[in-house]
Image (cartoon, rainbow, N blue to C red):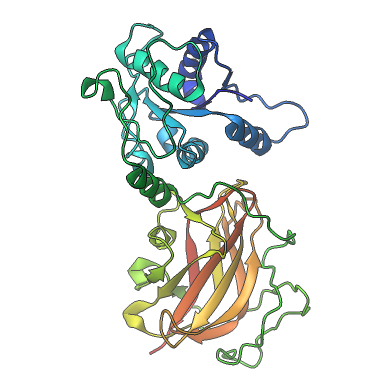
Length: 375
């Protein structure tokens, strides 16, 4: 177990080492070196170090603000109420972490008398105990928000925000659960479908549509689209009129915003998390393929999900199209993993997130739905 976990971008290793040495001199144990022991996976080592730490310090720099790893580690620290951010460059902190303001170490080079570094030591000392200078009245809880230059307005005392506000901030901005749901064993093949009731409300648009081969956990087989290729489009994209109608949280629109470089966490929850998408001018559409962007092997990548179709209303009756499973790898020719199913005609598409590849929440980049609008 380490007292402190330092999250940083590889380019900031020198600053991370300087900070780690300063903490070590105070008698605290620090995890910061990202060398992986033989026989261990990177995900496993990172997760164990995060889970055992009593304080997570994130070094925000021009490199780390775009790092998926740093954002993930910061999110885990914030969810546990142990995040302590520090600016080492003059940069904008990612939006989801702005409510927890950072100590400014942009001009710190190891001087123990540096005002914000000295206060950073006091803050860390309040969390992990030990020999940090200054008197600590109490340890911050998971419902407190740390503020920059907080000693100027409340000398000698850590600023605290009411428990209810802090809890709402954490849940709303991060969407994490404290534990991991145990997921049933899944096949490693893409397009995995689980048995479902016969879909009578959404019959295939052509009799030649292929069906699932095996009723006990079958694999959907790619089939040639029956729609004219010239009219097929991504029905979910904003420029084509796609939009979120109702969802379990406000992060679902990011899955169709067209930005392939950034992701957003979507909490899984006990019964999953879902969103209902509509099409241009609230028209019905015919579709037979759903695509998920996977940029590389990550524990937070979407694993299992379910697609459902509806015609009644956004909160009315939906019929399951099937359950599917991504591969946790990147395909370089086309990083979008495609899942085919017998053509469906419906006014609404419901996407339900069921599990990730190991993390407590799902990080989503982009979804696409291929089909045509009804006239």
